[in-house]
Image 1 (cartoon, rainbow, N blue to C red):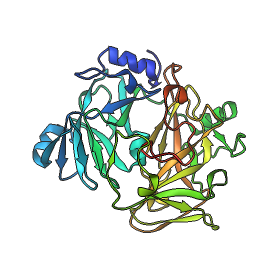
Image 2: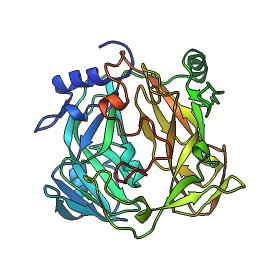
Image 3: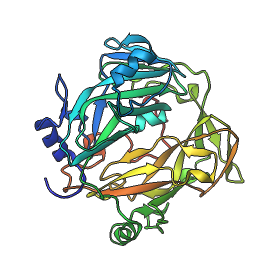
Image 4: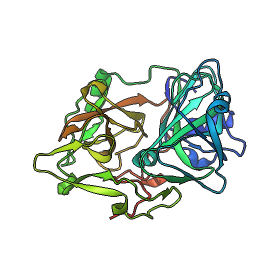
Length: 366
């Protein structure tokens, strides 16, 4: 394995074989995604009083001795209540070589259910960051914000992306050059569109309705019933979500702390030898944010001429006005260390390849 960049699936498989990623009951093939690996909840969760990091001189287990309220057996399923914080040791552990580091993010489905999830490590000082050469356990902090959810041992809420070396993120000039060779953005007529590149590929919000739809988004209903994360295409969307109709002003006022599902105006694409991550592009522009950063695997949007990005949005403190075409996030592209052997798409059962304005896979499709 040579060069710097994100590890594609075949290198993740090799990392498992070499013991860089391991679990007592083994790592399952279905956990391996095109450029990431799904992480599984262990058998026990701990309800805690507050979120925390380990700090340089402490382990998560030591912190749990101080902050744990009670433990919960997940082997037969258990309810994680809305507004509560849980720490769950993950099945997977790491023994990384010195040149390898990692980053974690919630899975797409996790974000669309407003389950705030991030990974912490022993002696770690950042959430979701796995430092080079890390050896030890991984823990998930899980905090359902809108819906109570039933989880089980083995539930996959978060994913890990490993990188070798550093400096794999594409500069703006390199990204612009890539767009001339392999378009990263398409318009509604499925033609290459202008790419707005500044600190990554900028992504804006659609408030006029995809393909003429009168619905521009969804707002989560308060006090809805619980969701069992094992039940796919099971729940009626209107029991949990309020559709937001298009307004002639092409504007939307976000109510403080409400949770919204919206879509990008652009149809974006991640070419085969790249991976991407969505990040808030500038937190100083207002009291709202795209609540969950997300990984975009190689091949995203490549079966068609681009795919909309789904945006999970929340305003904090005050109502905030969004306008059609307003920039809300950036896509940061990174190189892979090798050509991937598999791509995101329908061929491997990817859930959201041809998505428009899509809720999570737990809801019945219209």
